[in-house]
Image (cartoon, rainbow, N blue to C red; front, side):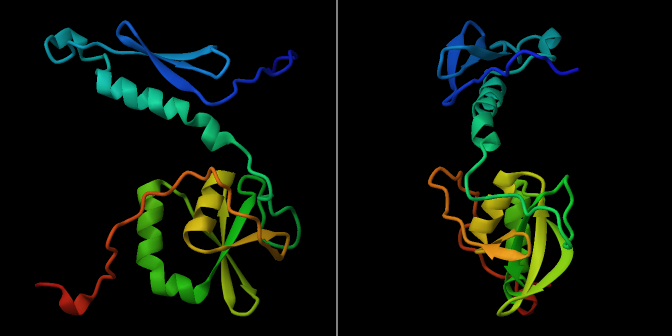
Length: 189
């Protein structure tokens, strides 16, 4: 059941403050949002197996501080909207990649998406507009924007290509350095 009270805001940036055997996540107004507890002596005693180490707690607290970045809606990147195309309310954001580009760079696209946890799903829809474009659908706006930016895609709004500006605060994807395409002729047996 949803509360009838007005929704509270927790403005970014969120930061981490260290407490006694705990890390506290605090918003820009000083409101305590989360506490992640840990023990420094986890490896000494067998009864501490259910506790986090300081490093594990720090990674979790850091992930919590990034939540506003992932949930922020960016202007210009709208849902495709209902229509004759293959649109689902559960995956409203669509990005098109040129089919020739996909064939030439499939290994790189697949690897970078898996490395960054970007769940890209092909809709099976093809668009002909100065080439053939394959459409991919996304549940979250940030995933779609990162995919669009990394692979020079086209944002879809309805059945038209839309050309929004790249957001300045877009978190970068982890990329593969010195990417070399696999050549089976050079593979050792």
